[in-house]
Image (cartoon, rainbow, N blue to C red):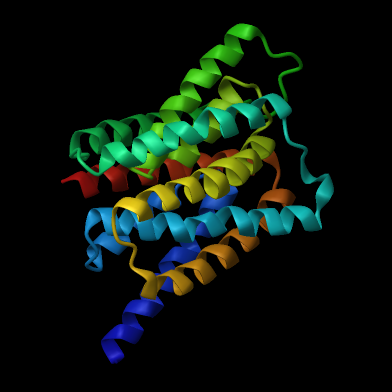
Length: 257
């Protein structure tokens, strides 16, 4: 009983903190929560499915706070349609691929790219500071290709999709950083993870005894984090994004070994 209670305390505390920072930075919860579930004894596929069910509430928590502050942002219609009708099928494909493929090499490469992204955004002071006034067809096509790859990533490794979504929405689609993060919460955290959870759940087991605890930690962490996101200046959000990216990349490489 004592060991089970300790496991639950660790699971709640770490998941709350991971999702708080993820909701401020636009991703990164999977770098912490997924390896934690594996360390605590779940097989990779079961850990992935369990994580996806819980992390849907990262988006729900963010949306709950957003609807209490409706002026925080408005959805970009073009980006929304791409993330729904092109991103969701990519997530399903990624989920089906990961069941049969070793992910170690991909984790190492992804970790290095994530670290590089964090360093880049840390020193690029104008990153996400202003909205791009007009989006070209070239940017839209490049952004769509990027979101397909990120959808595959979300369905397979479930680590890095949020950070890379935010990065793509800022650098390619031209969204302001805080608005990009909130788009990531709506589509990647909520919709894509719900699609991934259903797909993974149909082909492997989900460890349901831990799901309520994870949902509570994820929802509350996201709610608090989104409250901070709305209030923080873009410069502070950029620094948090950069630090989370670097730490997440290091964590992912370490987990691969």
